[in-house]
Amino acid sequence: MSEAALAISNENPVLDTDFAKEMVRQMRAVDTYGTYDDWSVEKILDPFVLTKEKKKEIPVVGDPDEITMSRVKAYYNALSAMIEKECGLMAVPMLNLTHEGFGRAVITVGKLVVMDKTLRDVHRFGFPSLSKMKDEMDTLLSVALEIIGQHPKVAGM
Amino acid sequence: MSEAALAISNENPVLDTDFAKEMVRQMRAVDTYGTYDDWSVEKILDPFVLTKEKKKEIPVVGDPDEITMSRVKAYYNALSAMIEKECGLMAVPMLNLTHEGFGRAVITVGKLVVMDKTLRDVHRFGFPSLSKMKDEMDTLLSVALEIIGQHPKVAGM
Image 1 (cartoon, rainbow over the protein chains, first blue to last red):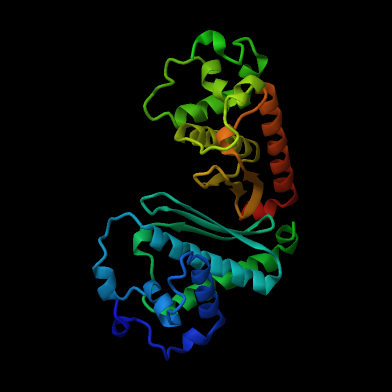
Image 2 (tube, rainbow over the protein chains, first blue to last red; image 1 turned 90 degrees about the horizontal axis):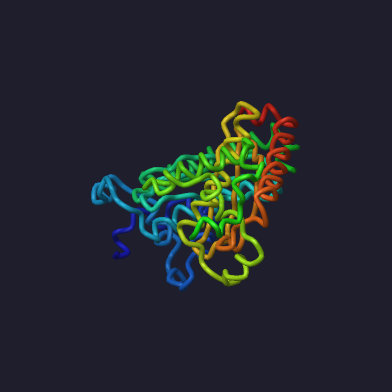
């Protein structure tokens, strides 16, 4: 992949947000072999952005590979880390995927399920743009924090 | 395996309980090829009972095979079904196991985590006797129902 082909510009303001920093941190955490060590931030986050053209190249039916699965993991790990930062309680992500790319992602805080999402077509996991990706995570984050606010006792159990 | 070698007697009173009936139902549910169709109830439940002698034959370190994993699944599915029967709300089991047999089992009712268990050494999954197995499930069941009783609103979410 040449640098010119990246879907994210290195001047994208979203790259300076906590969201992008956490995503990069989580991607580096699953990068056992240090492949990303000399990669730029926009290059690390690039696979999350599936433009219409990129999406067209992926078959409708397919099995997700290890790299795609690790991206999904990094995404929900980042969300958990952000929930944890906001509410001060431990947030535990749990991802259950069949090898066909169907499954369920759950984040629990104490005895409270703060995020519960059915996943399908994980081999096509991605977002139209980096800011859309941030928007979706912000929504999930605020819903999670709202649930915690409503049931602080269960979250602290 | 000869009939004589079974660890469960066919006169064991536990076999008449709802627990044993649900366990057999769940075992039949994961039995895609109908292997158990002409098996007796005690033969189906026999692998769950690991007597000291049987446990000695299993290496301390090992990877669980598909059949062992399906037994663990059946166990938590049965627990979910029994929670559901008692409280009238849907209980969803979720099992996350690495191929080394470590992981986590969670059962949620609504937004409430009613059972959360860390699993290890799943290749040695089993109980000293059928009545010990029933005791453990009864304990998990009553804890789950207690949590639901304390937070009915969250369980109904």
